[in-house]
Image 1 (cartoon, rainbow, N blue to C red):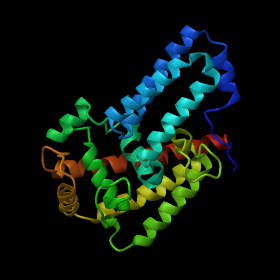
Image 2 (tube, rainbow, N blue to C red; image 1 turned 90 degrees about the vertical axis):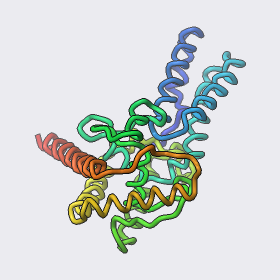
Image 3 (spheres, rainbow, N blue to C red; image 1 turned 120 degrees about the vertical axis):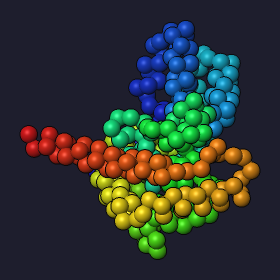
Image 4 (tube, rainbow, N blue to C red; image 1 turned 30 degrees about the horizontal axis):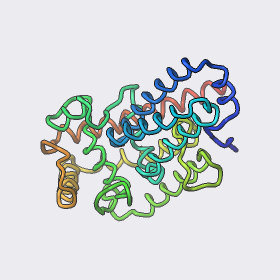
Length: 283
């Protein structure tokens, strides 16, 4: 199924904005900038860099606010592209799928919170039911898909699947192929991906069921102590590479059980959603 090119420079958007008064436009723009900041921080991007970039964009826009039809869309798109490309989120499609369906979506409750938030800070200090610290999430991703250049600060193989590297390579290739339909610029592998639409695609959800199913199968087969030891080893690798401290405590078996529960709930939620869609299509 072909998808339309997703662009922030759509005529409909610029036409609607042009009909709004200057004052109301500024209110909407500030509101959008706030939402954008929260979304980017929630995706793991550095809060200070996000805020600085948006403030610079707003300042530049304010100098020529009469050109809102063109300038507003240009700066919004530029801000998104700068952060998506700089953080290389588009280079870790498999990681984004895992994060969304395991940590962001299961049961309608987020298990991860923004970098520097009260919830994330607390979970780094002590085990907190219902909250998974972001460093633990990142090490778990490395266990599954290995490290990604430009995303992870050290090198590691996808140890959860042992020597079955072919499975992860095939999953990565499939995820990239699916994501190409949601590039903001058609036929451009460097263009940012429109992830909200990407995650709603039934093909992506079917693929995620297969991926999470394999992850869950491995977690069922392996002792909890084994995964805990692997996460400790990955944490040690980071400490040898990066001087900053990301955790104020050691991981525990409680963390492992919460990770297992997150995968199980994410898989169940996906399967239920697909089954509901299938049932609705038959009525």
